[in-house]
Image 1 (cartoon, rainbow, N blue to C red):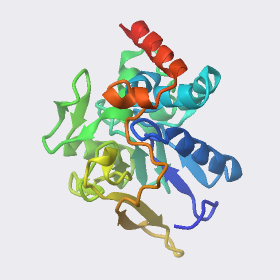
Image 2: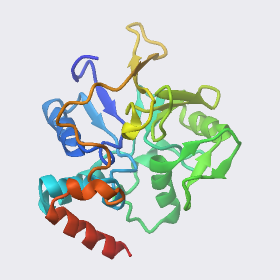
Image 3: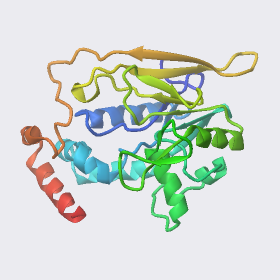
Length: 270
């Protein structure tokens, strides 16, 4: 795919951390690229760029094992500053999760959201949540999400209304593992792309990336979907979820400081 540059920009669509045991290295690599080429690297927030998720899915334990509380706090500050969505060439809407349950939300309303998610406005909070958590479904309208809570799935009519209101062509989102690494929905107006092959070391799924090209003479963006399988694991590989308190073997990898911090954070949530 080449290296990031202003003529070859990269957009990474969230969930840089958790589950995998090299989240710190992944995130620091992305940040190094962002510093080296600010206009060529774009980072979006996923639902796992959040303290509440990091505690259970490994990033908290990993950071406190490899670094300390100061590093962890700076990572959380970073997560709250990440964009919730991107628009490519005024035609493609990209978010980690999905579309807002509120009908025909304008791009300007999304842009004005409080990224710290501490707003007292419940409707705006739901837009924030949906951009990180919502999934497409084939039923019309809004449906309860199998993920539970107050989460919602959105139907093809929601996608069509959002695109029409904002003069866009289609949506690219992530958030769900797909066997082939990608999947079209909603009459090819909503594309899921998932870039982690052999998910959590147990799946047989492929990964995928999307390449968009703007024709020199103008016109619709040209799309290429590239799929790939997992690479061979090196000798120093640490298994997925190794720093998560949800797996029994985590004590083999967590430092004592990390264990104490996880206990403290878990008690605060209780």
